[in-house]
Structure formats: C-alpha cells, structure tokens
Length: 305
Image (cartoon, rainbow, N blue to C red; front, side, top):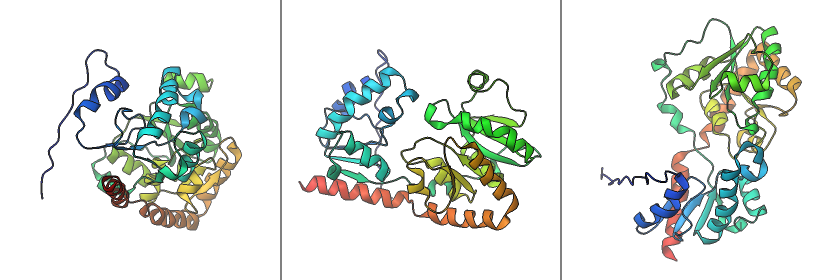
C-alpha cells in the first residue's frame, strides 16, 4: 500500500482563533486544491470543495454565541460563491443552504454521512458501569436545539416505568439547575464516554432517545441504528429523511408521545426486534466508501474544467 505523506500545519499561537488560522494561514499551505469538511473554509481558495453541514446558526440562532453566528453569516455566502463545489449532509440542509442564498441549489451535492465506523467500536473493551436497573439512553448537550429539557421532563414518567435515564455528554449540575428545580432520582449522568463505552451502552439500552428540534443529519441516531438499538427520534427535520421507517417518532415538544413510544417498547418484544432489524438495514445504506466515491467524482469534475 502506498503511504500518503501527511503535513501538520501548526496554528498561530497569537491570536489563537481557529477561524483566523483557517482564513489567514491555511491558504498559504494549499497546493492544487482543498477538501474542507468543517463549514467555515478559507474564502481565499476557489479550487476547493466545502461541506456545509447545516444552517443551524440561521434556523436556531439561540443555540450559538453572537460571534459564531456572525462568522457564519459573513463567511458562508462568500464560500458559496467562490468554492468550486458545495456539499452537505441531507436534502433538508441543501434546501436551506439554497433558500438562504448561501449557494445555488444546482451547485450543492448531498453526500450524507456514513455509519460503518461503528464496526470498529468494541463493547468488550468498555469499563462503564451500567448498573442493575433497565434504562433508556440519550445524549445531553447545552445547545438549545438538542432539547435536553424534554429529556428531563420524561424522567419521572420513565421512573414509574421502572427505567433509568442514562445521559452521556457535557451536562453538569449548573446546566441541570437551569432546566429543572431538582435532579431526577433516576437520571444517571455518564459524562463524556468513549466509542467503546457508547457501543456497550447502546447494546444494553431499551432504546435511544433523540429529541433534537433540528439536525443537519443526526449521526448519533444512525450510530444507534447501526448497533441495533431501537430508536425513538424527533419528527423535526431532518430525522425522518435519514431514519425512514426504522424508528418510532414523537414531536420535539410532546412529552406524552415519547413516553407512549417507550411504553410500547417495554411491552412489545417483537417491536424492539423489528426496529433493531430495520435500523441495521437503514444504517447500512449510509456508507463512508460511497461518500468518498462521491467526493472523488466531484474532484474529477473540477479537474476536468
């Protein structure tokens, strides 16, 4: 196998701002062309493919700081005009990128994301303590669109069903205090966990709850499906596009529907097996190899111009 040389470009130490590095330093190191996968790519480079994952800064601005929103507002349209091609991770995101005038619809290619990386996770290497009580699993993040407050509202009803609510991610006592007067007794905060731990938790959970108010793709939902964990997802865009008929759905503000869906999974073994089977099949359609081939075709098209 031919080895590919890798060159690491250090960031400026002063000022140490990621976007300053991207815009002011990175262009001097690019020879030929650039693949940019992180939204805010260097505007100075025309010969590049830029992946704009979503327009959450426009659609859910309360989830981000003013400076972050301003950077996206100014830089993304410039990239949409100058870059050779724009990619994104769902048809939903493509519609918004075009709708907000960031890039013409015909210039945007949907590449989705992959799921096959979860095959490298090994639950046997996990050391996480899952306790003795059955549980549902979720992710907790501070951004408003992640809808942690709904998850916390579900905790008492889950407790009455005999279930713990296991939450991984950056959720601390300060955030909980903002959202609920008292931490639910059945809430188990796992903190930041490894991929192997994630495989272990998803393999043992009754289901995975994903109540986001909006997503560009929803990779955690696809990872859960790939591991055969029954999924309850929000009806908010673009999760139905990505998850199809391999999930149960509930409105992002309808706590009762989430509990009804969990109750069904508690009672119906056949439904859990059905969702696990459908989920694995659905996740298998999202392949990193297929995505890489799409990028190679785009590169070839740009090189032929």
